Length: 195
Image (cartoon, rainbow, N blue to C red):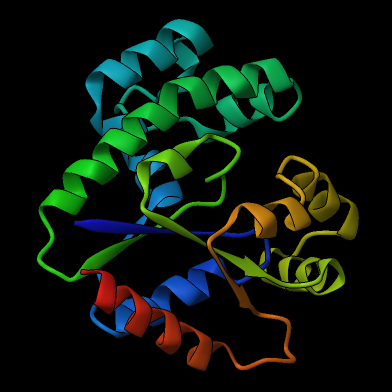
């Protein structure tokens, strides 16, 4: 089963592009959403998180205390790196298991931090979704009802867009200048020939 990765900076529109592939009947694994689920579902991972971040990392009902963890990792890069080193391998394993269970010509794995976590080694090709920074900032401010500085701070935690474009096999331009659907349809046809 071929796995195609989709990545892009915050506000680039990678989830929108993934949803277009889903409309074409291609299964999509949303890594960020899956990671939140895995942090609860995977008992071994939950124990590792609890050991490092304390019992307050989980509520008594077993659900994840996201605020407790966020308060730690978003102010300390070393703590964020530790959390990522625990969660990303579990998410990669989960995505590979999921991919083997699909019945499609190929599957999509959507992940914000594909190059940053080196999960790109676990996919066959990578698409990066590109949008100019000013447009991305505006989109995230509207979507998350947040201020410009908060968006910029989140952007600085991700790899530069120019580097992502160089590392990717394909680029989808979501810059309000080019139509996205024809770009996705062309890629879909390309990926069908790989299968």
